[in-house]
Image 1: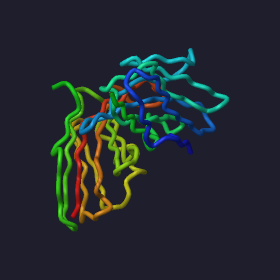
Image 2: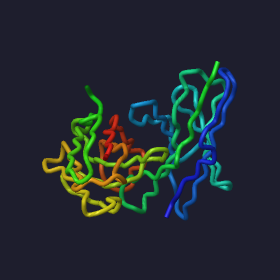
Image 3: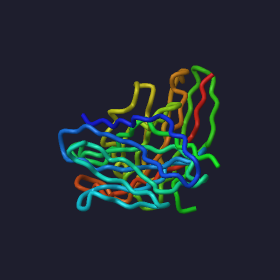
Image 4: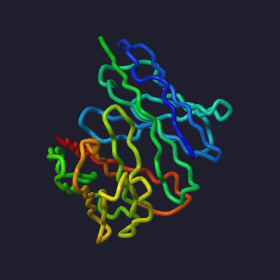
Length: 115
Length: 118
């Protein structure tokens, strides 16, 4: 069965600094990878996804992620964060051997951006 | 609105009570998912519908949990005889397509229902 590990439960960072949120997955079959953001009292919003092709994926709000098959990682990066980026970020994986798009999520990383 | 809506947004129940949580997916969406998000955790899959058919319910924690989507649109998640460990946010998501081989079939999430069992 596939699983997702987010190594950092919380990442504090100053405004305009770069940030990286780490995600590692385990699966014996081809995977599709996603990053979602959750603002307080809101549902999950898709930031970006890797399905195939270029391993560098660009998403909304200036975020990007790189799929690294050899390291089974899909780390999320942003070169300069804003206060408004403060939220919970979830990495997720889908494997198609289940016959439908069942998302398996990590435990999340809380990004705290301070002035 | 055009998004997924859920009601109620907050529900407080006494232990042993039955609750019903409603999900209105985006109009025309074939697939509907329920997830449970415990405090400090990521969402965990509960069940999946393709139209009115419940194709997977492997994530339902016990036989106290029951989900339905009788007309292939609105779905209800029912929890009988609630327990404190049922306290969580219940998220509903829908996607436009169903079936295998469609990894680009984005799931759109509702705001969730926060259930607190006292």
